[in-house]
Length: 349
Image 1 (cartoon, rainbow, N blue to C red):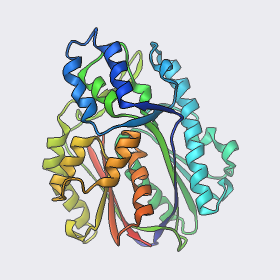
Image 2: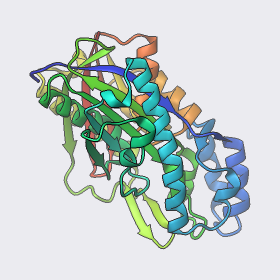
Image 3: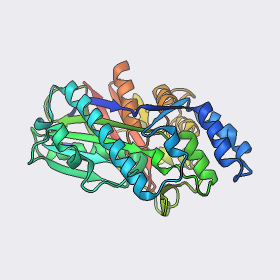
């Protein structure tokens, strides 16, 4: 790292329609049980997922009808654009800036397709300048919040004095399928929600944290762990391996390698801020890093209140952590399709 880059602000946004887990179980029973005989054996997974409520972009009745890819695409554009603007407006307001002050916009999203991309669709409402650079990023999945933060840091660093807006927005509910329920579909129904988070980065010597390092690690021959399948209905979840044992076995050596490039070891980190893929993944991370069970408390709270929103989730957790008071050094980390883990190291202001 050369030019220091600071996180000036952070804003989050959730869609208006709230789903309680009990309601999801009953809906799942009415929809899936007649065609998926193992449904009742899967019910404990809903209650063990660590999710109490989550928010989705459309009214629940919308999801109970078969939806084509064009219908899902239109719903994504509508919901994602609103969440993009609301989270970005919150981040800009906290930083005391307007859209016209932003030089580069990085948009991270993997749950829908927008061309023109979301920041272009939002330009009039947000007041972005015509000469602002646009950097849409697709395909990072749950790792997108951290990888996007690292990318935004590099862009801010490359042009000292510039201001970079990062927006992560996901509508995971668009992957809800009625046609051919599988175990993977049921697990995703138990944990995923919608949301957006945004932050402003700059080399200005202000803000609540300084980015001091970033790194990524991709494991060979792991393309089947996580991703999307594409069919006539749209995007569907791919999750073909038992993820928690993989995390417990592999995440610590990968983190040690990523930190070593910054001259650090795991014991130098005061707080890990982790994307919660689910409760079992959180427990696997705690075990791998030698943390006491329950240490990742902000992660559990966000998972309980919002579900797994994919890329924005870790920024929701960062928001909780900074409001509680960031320690001297923290590491934000998330895993996603590839199979990849990303990390960003922060020093508290």
